[in-house]
Each structure stands twice: as C-alpha cells, then as structure tokens.
Image (cartoon, rainbow, N blue to C red; front, side, top):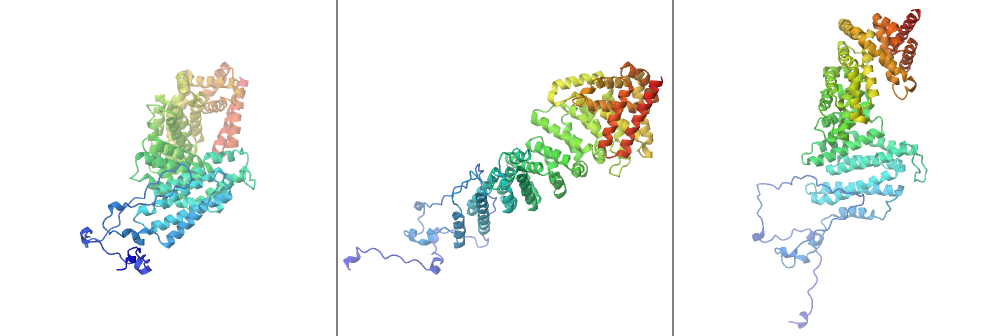
Length: 629
C-alpha cells in the first residue's frame, strides 16, 4: 500500500444524473418497515380549510419558518444519509419556484402612508399574484392544507391591504378601472370562509360612513390627487365602484357566503354572531350608499327572507341589526313592504309577535329601545301606503294588540297610537283589487279611536305620566295628533260611500254608533271636541312649532261631525262655539287650510279631495245660519 493514500481525502461523489435523481431509493430494512394492507387503497384525509389569524394591519405576513429535522431521532437510513443531495430540496417544481420568484420580486419597498395611483396598482397586482399562487397550491395539494396554508395567509394579508383605498376616496374611480371591485367580490366565493369574511370586511371598510358622509355633506377640504376632483366627482366615483360590485354578481355571491356563515356548524355562537354582524354591516353600508339597493335586494335575491329569519331569533346583536335593516328596506321600497308583510308567510305575524313581548315590560337599555322603535317603523312604513298590509294587520289582530299596548301604559304605548293612525288611513281601492276585506279596518278604527278620544282627563293624565317617565321618547303633542287623526280617518272613511253593497249596512251601523257617542250624555263628547278646538286655536300663531297639525285635524273632525249630524251642527252654532269664544269664521279658515293642503299633496283627489272641499261648504252654511240667528 502507498502510504500517500492514507493522507489523501476521499474522492468527491459525483452528482447523480437526472434519471438517478428520480430513481426510487433503496428500501429500508424489513425490520423497520410498516406493512400496508393491500386490500384497502389509501384515502385522502378530509379537512376543513384552516382558520386564518385576524390581522389588524394590512402589512404582509412574515414568511413561514422552514421545517427542521432532528437528526438524533433518525437512525434508520444509514450514516451517510445527509450527504445525499436528494434530501436538500424544497419540494417545489421549477414552475412553483418561478411563481414564488415573481411574488418576491413584487415585494419592493413602497410607502403606504399616502396611497397614490402607483401604490394602488401595486396592491392590486400583489393581490392578483397571491390569488394565482393560492389557486395553484390548492390545485396541487388539494388534500394537504399545510401545503397551501402559507399562500392563504399571504392572500388574506394582501386582500386586507386593499382596504387602504378607503384613505384615498379620489382613487375609487381608478380602482374601478383596475377591476378592484371584481377582484374583491370574487373572494366571496373562496373555499375558505375566512377569506370570504375578509372580503366582506374590506368592502365594508371601503363603503364606511366615514368615507361617504364627508363627501355627501360637501365638507371635504381637499382631494389629494393630481386631477383635483370635486367632492361630487369623488362621490360619483364611489357609486361607480358600487355599480361595478353589483355587475360582478355581488348579490348572488354575497347571499351564498352569508348563508354559509349562518349555517356553519363548526363556529361557536360568538364567532357566528361576529361573522353575521359583519355581513349585515356591509349590507347596511350598501343601503346607505345606493338608494335603489332596497329594491334590488327585494327583487334580485332572497336576502329579505334571510333577514326575516334572523329577526325571528331571540333578541341579540344579530336579530336587532336584522330588524334595523328590514326597517330601512321597507322605508325605501314599496315592493319590499308587500314582500315583508304579505308575500313572506307569517311576516306580519312575526313583527306583531316581536312587538307583543313589550306589552308588560320596557326595553332594558337604549339599544333595546331602538330595537322596539325599528319594529314599529316597519309596521308604520308598510301600513300607510299598502291596503293589503292593512288587511293583513287586521287579520292578525293587530288592532287588538295595539289596544292592549295602550292599556298597559308602557313605552310601547307611545308607538301603538301612531300605528293606529297609519292603520286607519283611507287608502282603499288604490291597487284596484279591493274587496269586502278592505273595509274590515273600519270596525277596528271605531273600536280603537273612540275610546282614546273619549278618555278626556284620563288621557291627559296618562300623557303627563308618560312624558315624565319617558321624556325624549314621548311627545304629548304628537300623541294628540295621532289620536285625533284616527277619528278623522274613521269619519272620512264613513262619509266616502265607497264600500261595496254587502257592507253598507255594517258601515251605516258604525257611523250611527260614532255619531251617537258625540250626542250622548248631553253632548259631552261634542263639548270636549269644541273645547279642544278652542284651546288649540288660541295657540294658532305658534302652530308651526306645536299644535298646527292637531288644529287642522280637530277642525276637520268638527266639520265632519257637523255634516253628518244636523243636531250636533245646530248645537255647535247656537251654544258651544259662542261659549268657547270661537267664531265659525275661524273654523272655516282652518278647514280651508286643510283642504288646500290635501289638494296640494294628495294624489287621489277624486275621492278624498272632493270630500274635503265639501266640508268647506258645510262650514260656510253653518256660518250663514249663525249670522241669520
């Protein structure tokens, strides 16, 4: 042996060829090998997409640390295993590494404290690359979430970074041109519900009141862009952004993601409430930005039904928010009013049932009181314009419930009187499909209006008590207006003569009972009516601040009673009006003012307008008879 060979190092191993690199390594000893059951092929594990951590800032998440191997625990593969280059790869193909290089090359330093067009474009390009990488990793490793978790974290971070657009409203138009709305809306369909929720949060941030209100109020000081857009132009750009969202199939994708979050059995109750509140917040923002959104929600989706289902639940953040949005929708869409109260099975019954829980108790806090107010707003908005809703209200015993609330003298009583006013408005025949049921409310209005009006001193005592107990939540003047309006609505309906022949006997009986109330007990109720008219008339000069509407309604009601009962008319002209120091001329001026208001505002002048003008003639005749006497 040559002694020089002892000091010569081992020859370097040559790199394996491509074929050898791909060759199957030698199998380990049978003593260390698990035996597989050949009868059952391996099955990919089922999994839920990993939950992503919530990030408070839009900065990109730090890279995931590389995995390490503890060599001390690996003794099965020989002493020289670490020298084999096959065990030093990253597990990625050349195409995967190329995609990662593209993403890394986009990570250039950029100042996000002041978003400008280049920075906006950079954010959207980075979002595109993160979406592409996540799609490829999910397609490559569909059954191993750990392989695409890092790409999903980056996608979440890059998606939230687009929320920086809210700091630069002038760039919304450019963002629309770069298809930012479509990119964000597309994330609503992502397999991971946390990514869909992140898209909802970003859209809600971009349409937040803090972004829209300064523009709508025209108090934005300066627009920080090179083109110097005006607030109106910037607001138009935001509306264009919303239109692009809707064009990207937003309604369908949003509703699908919303329902998925609602039915997700793996969420805790708190997590589900938080997620649903964020979906409702985005819907709220859209309703504030676009006034036509209420009609679109009603016609292009089943979101109204979903909101009604959420409202049925026990009182909480989600149910209260759902009720608030239903109130907004019905106030802005005639079709929504019918859908909520008539077309949806049990819609009216649901609203009345929720209101009935306040019959014997008051709201516990301000939010609870707002919840109650929203429920009554839903009723009033629907009743004042829709005869079919009035019919549903009567069929579901709405009059009876309102009377129970009034007798209970809780906070709900202050809203119940307003509901009775709108429930008795004479809007019959407007939809051309009226029938006998359209006049069912005449009996209800008599049963509810007359007791309220005839309470006299007890009513005023209740008003003082309610004003002291509820302060800002109650107005005696408004309460008086609604009580008087119920009687005016009743008298107007009885005198229109539009009821079908099958109900004429019932209407005539109802009219006789109402007039008898004013004549009984030596005209006590008529005396009360004249006294109230005289008292209100003394504050005629400040009617614009308080009492103006009530004065008009009292004058109309008194004129109607005089027209329907000659006995009451003679008694007023001969004794009551002179005793109250009220001239018939004052009554005529009040009625003429009311007729002028009806002629200017009422669309249905054939019935209501002609009837009101006839009242002026009645008062003129009364004035003539008083002068001749």
